[in-house]
Amino acid sequence: MQQFTKAQFITITRNIIKEEGIQGVSIRHIGARMNCSSAAIYKHFDSLEHLVLFACLEFMEPYVRDVRTIESQENDGLNTYFKICESFARNAFGNPYIYERIFLGSYKYNLDNIFKEYFQIVDSRLKFYEINRDSQAMLLSHDLHLRNLISLKKYAKGYSEEELKTYNDLIVYMFIGMIHSMISDGAKQTDADFYVNRYLHIIRTLLHI
Image 1 (tube, helix red, strand yellow):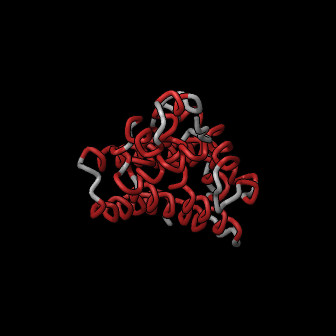
Image 2 (spheres, one colour):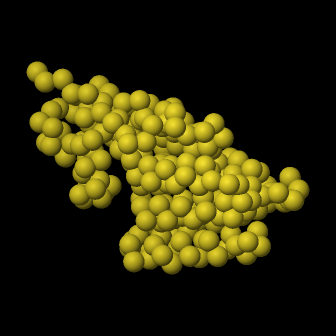
């Protein structure tokens, strides 16, 4: 009997997502693609949702690369923070079902461990050790509030602790509401620019960028 690796299941699932969307993924579909039983899949993953989260992480790689590039440049305060927000928004609203699954799905609390394992077992073009420690702490956190607050504190100078927490809450709750709104409206790709521009406009207004 052929033995399949965890990476092979992730690759097949990722390909299905690219071809049919996240809604096209099922245990039966994966099994048919790989000519294996559901037991072979559950040998490596707790559930379909667990496998899907691993497969979704490839879609975060463009954002991770952007963060690495942006943070390697000169610290330009709020403008640097805004560039990170812009990359996150374009990737998230460009892939709303995927980012919703990553940060708001049932395995979000295991994201830090899953992210680390992903880079160990998948032939990724981006190696995790290439990312600086500050960015690692932000990228590995499952908590959207903590992720954003790490960047805000690093780049938004001249604000009190209370002001930063308030701005952080507003920005994160806005993102969660907008991603849910986009999905409830059918997540049409033509709407992505509207959500990106609206999200960024509100951040500019809040922080006077």
